[in-house]
Image (cartoon, rainbow, N blue to C red; front, side):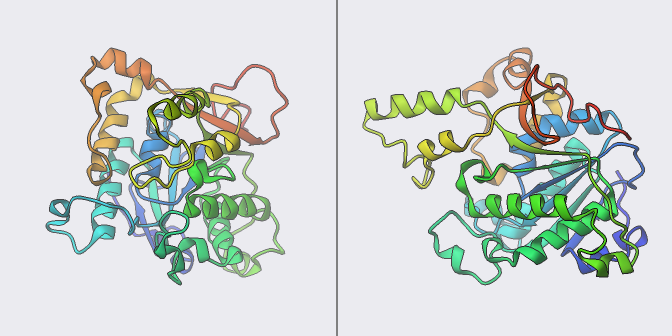
Length: 314
């Protein structure tokens, strides 16, 4: 994969983002923009879907709000890196190559940490961003990259992370604003013409496992409202905020790329666990599908979609 300076293609992106990394020129007829919060969100959430579409020639661009400064990791993994952010940035680059992302755009905010943590108070934390500025950055990317499909978190950010929630708010606002030339007119004046994506999706997941865990955990003296290593994840809240699966993308054929992307984020995972020891054909079926909620056009029921680009005019 090749890199090229972003200013050669879109000279005004440097005013909107902290850094852009191009892996290939944005030339495909079908284009997707994913807006998440941290290095690894793209891989642990949708690596299979990304690999499926990039393998089919779709340009998939990733806007990453922070560099994951609040992530925890073994100090040994910091050897050779200036700090956590540098390590996680390098991991994202490696994952991007594994799943063939077209570009990465760092928006320049600081990781906010989980709700209630001290990191929430940092003035550069994404959760404290001005929503008009945060949405304007995504508007600029939409106008520059001209995606037909935009993907972000649901209103609760999946599991309540403040950065995930801000990414949702900024992306939804940008989706609604990007085609309006009276909004962010300074972008239009410098050549970023209005553009309206055709579809907006939230990433989601099945509620069955979460609800089963909520029922079972009290039997072992565990509180489902205090889940995770730091006991800062509320499974009952997650269950109530899950958005319905309207679209299911099969990525079974892309297990190798998916797992390579996961492995790239070694600082954020302790390995593949028990499932990782199963034969590849079995793992490919377990990890075969990734779920999404179609928001625009509004879902009216019926059979689930199987393609994020279904009905798109490219």
